[in-house]
Image 1 (tube, rainbow, N blue to C red):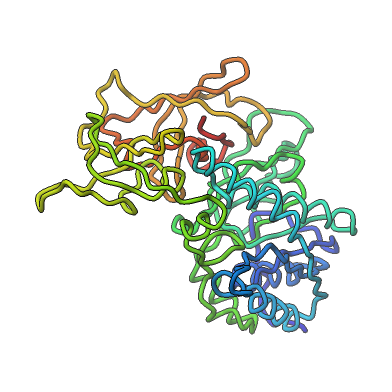
Image 2 (cartoon, rainbow, N blue to C red; image 1 turned 90 degrees about the vertical axis):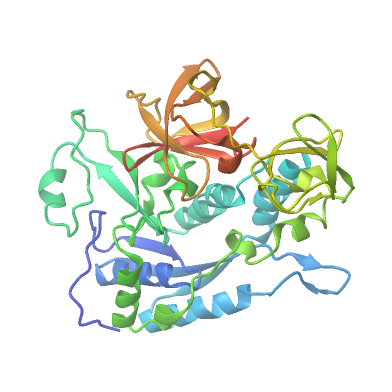
Length: 406
């Protein structure tokens, strides 16, 4: 099919004739990504990644709506409209092992993991990327709202001036022949997904394209309509990565035994009960029962939990940290996207997706990274600081990397 549409440019230097495998999820973002790439001269193949589906053994049916078949049909329709090859890649075993089993083990240990981060690391930019490279792909592409920027130091300036949009940062002052790939927030701040991509390395990013990163969501839907894609009016998917709309506590209760425990106040007094400390995360304000309360009580937040004793402690937590009590965190599994500790230490970070960035300083201490949150009046319980979460570093709009809260 030939489109009578002016070529759509984006923040990746186009190389006509290169082979790219696009992860078609069935949604509008990945469908438009495939259309843009084909319209810019790439040899495009659509790939639907089949992940693990939770199954209710007792009832003999999937847990929750079985949406992967519907998503696959949607992805196939996009490939048919674009007249590109379509492949189904079965990564069910990999997803169960690297994402689901990891998530369950973390909750059992009392930590709060981010399965979407692990899905990107192990599945989309792990198993999928490796498979694509073995099968002749020069690149893979996804519909993530993020901007990939190759920091060429010689002839990149003339090329980048030809690109539409002005989201590119200035060239680095470092003069070398080495190409560095940098990762930036998507132009649409409501859809930016850089938080989930902090584990990416130079070796991965040099094979990855994010065609819609410089666009607003409404622009993507307009392009979908212009390309004649059926996804133009399809609702965005919600839920946990490939698992979809599954209630987390209901899902975890199938792998972690519920056990009634006490809800404590800051004095250690029992004021209620819950069904298992492992099911709660720091900052949560629902799911437990308070038996000693009155109508004027303020909302209570989980501020700590003891897995061994099966207790959670709650508090109104209305008193902000004083200057001398700013939160200090230690990270494990740290990844710096550029492969090195940032030379500038006045950074910002996020502990949750779409959270307002928090000013911070990072200190490199042997095998660990310590982070000091700089902002006053920062309420840690409402922010939900919990071991196992991802803390992601930024310098302005550039995503520098991140780590797991210990």
